[in-house]
Length: 267
Image (cartoon, rainbow, N blue to C red):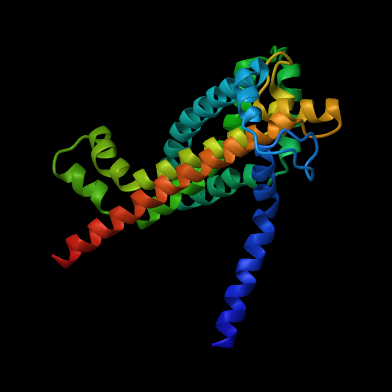
């Protein structure tokens, strides 16, 4: 009994210490004080100023555009890559699995510098396309890692069974394989969105200087003023709450699916 109480208490203390900075930031987003630590009264003016700030709105739109574009492209390429690796010969599968995991283990700064040198060598002008390529290179391996376990959990004979029943390879892929690995595809897509929204290093190296995202805007604004501008407290709080709501929705849907499947099995 004592061990359980101690274990639960230890976990709650760790969680509290992890989320204390975020909770502090959220609390001080409701005051106009310039410095965190001083309270000048409850106010929603920072949120009003956030939506009135054209630079923040532009950076937010750019960030969402890059994240969605990279998410779609990376999910398509990563899913097809995972299927191709899974159905390859054993030796080829082992080599390609290893190669696909190198970008995950590799330092992000190395990837950013490599992409920059590559674009400069070929005389490519830095623009939205170079930024998108950088984010796709960053996120594709994570889609492969998300989809591969679902392929391994799948019955290996269902694809051949579909072909034996008269389905073409293309139709068998769409009607049999994709429904089985859809949770992995969705997880990979959400992971690419998260990685893209959070990325600064590759964005800073592959973007045009006139194109700013939230990460580059926050870094630039903080470096210019030497401290976190008050309006950014409201921005980061809004992002945190949005992510929290998305996680609640995903967990709620997953829980409902498990309940439905459990009822179906019992019946």
